[in-house]
Image (cartoon, rainbow, N blue to C red; front, side):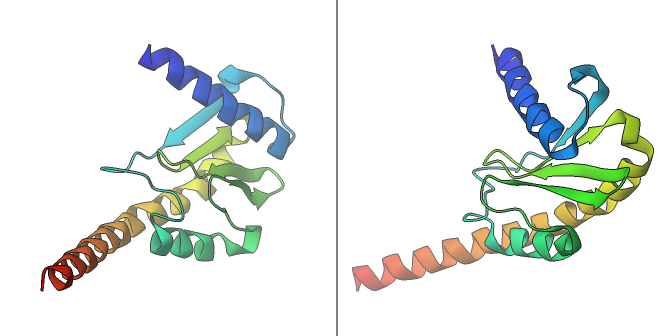
Amino acid sequence: MLLARMEVQMERSINRAVKLLGTPQEYDKYLSIKLYPPHGCCCSHCWPETWRAVNSFISPYGHVCHEGDAVIGDGDDKFVLESHESGPEIIVYLALATASTALAKPSLRAFQKNIENNRQELRSQSDNLLREMSRKRL
């Protein structure tokens, strides 16, 4: 059941990439790289600092809004970056893979680096919530 749901989600992601990249709809010729957060949602509302940093990094190509996507790169050096509540995803058309993976690698590093921002955001939110609860008790 889980595998079938993942296949449907991947097919949807590839369909969006086909439209954005203008590439053929050959599902077996795409690579999906999905990052799953350690817990919870990772949309731009829940991870504002992380997405701000990622959008700054990809700014020459555009930015990704809540549950959105963007084409990163130009010419044959491009891939799609998608924002999902379940985690960011990179979709690469394999015919462009050599150039695209070279471009995608720094984006993945940006996410890795900014996962620490998320941890700090979560700690900060928890601290604020605890302070608020303490004030209400007083």
